[in-house]
Image (cartoon, rainbow, N blue to C red; front, side, top):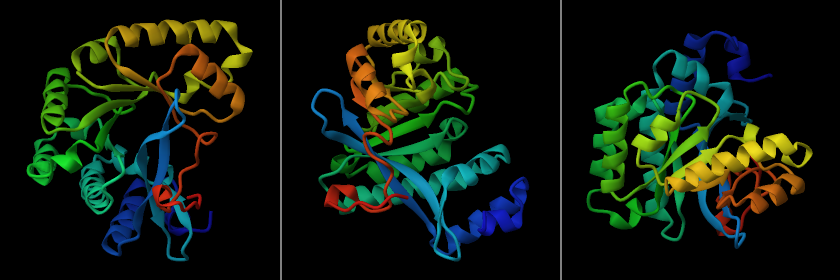
Length: 261
């Protein structure tokens, strides 16, 4: 790929980190917004904010190209700080929209990020109630008690809390039983091609029943075609997300604009 990350070396995490820090200083980090849709009504509940980078030629680079190396280096904190600032700014500017932001499970045990969120939302309940904090499940939530306190603090601040990519990483039923999250987003690997596998569909059904028993809302991630959407609706998912429902767009789709990014 002919972009900054490609030139610096795809496998060199330190170089990628330098590229991203430069992009941050030059205001070239931005969001693509993907809708999370109510299965019953088809209406958008909120838009997930997915970080992108605009390279020096103006092309958009997906977060997967740079987030993982930064996380592996233990430097994801500065990205999470920026994402929080940018999301709160968007919510303040657009009063009629709900937005979700992603934070690393590693950040869930770091006090300064939470302090920044509480400070930003302290006198802005209108913003807090339209913010969904998605804790990325693929990063280990190693300190369960600390993570539980983190989630409780987010909810006291007025935010909704989601556990992202459930089934793809390190979270377990103990996490679900201990963390008082509002929403569990089921990884797309459980959702894709369900129409072709009775066994996988039965496994998903059992998973959804157990999550429902905890009082959590469920989101089907990775809904990429009409067949998967039909099965996800039939199995009782509350919400759906994926390219079939709406691709990420760098434009603000709630303003009637569409442009993939």
